[in-house]
Length: 271
Picture (cartoon, rainbow, N blue to C red):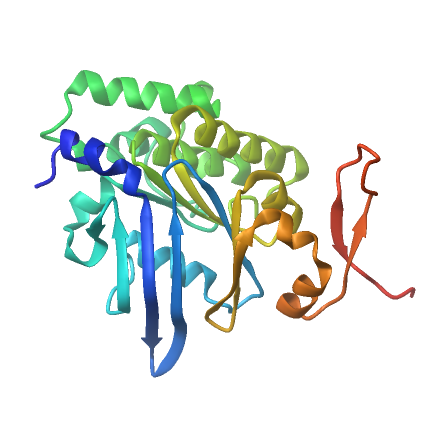
């Protein structure tokens, strides 16, 4: 069993992925992916549907095994960890959330503290849950069942659960999907605040190129299960690269030196 002090001594090592490959149902899903995520880094994963982005996160989270290559978190192979040990290091926010989870918000957050039972005290658990609710603004409906919440509210609860789990790395799979602009903005602000105030590494799958440029230091662009490109988010301004990754032409809006934010969007022909 790994202890709290051991985790603290290894946090600076972050995540290292080397030669990650995966076959499912006779089909190659991931192909020799390698990259590192430093502790405290905000890292985005982009690419077309079916590129392997969600599968990549599930491998890191330990949800999918049987892969080739290596994934290590804080210097330890994910494949060699128990589920409980892994859950002390990595938390995972899936794409969307089921509306029929039979728990209240508070009960659901209490479940997220399970990996720390026997290590943390009851007071520690209550403090972590309270801080998570405050950071995400969900305290007002903490006694409501998840089934009674809107999609945006449930997404806040999923993020709060990851915060209460108190891991060094949070994985998020398209966290703004299905959300209106107001809830998208709240979710983006929460992700940025968690990363900034807690020094938590964030690996976020997104289709929003502008979000990737705004928040992340490093981006991995996936295509057909491969890491087609890994580099600084500023490299996304090279529209030829985006054209190749997504198969459509991108255009930049805003001009250098104008003080305006640069926006990327696919070009559309007039109807």
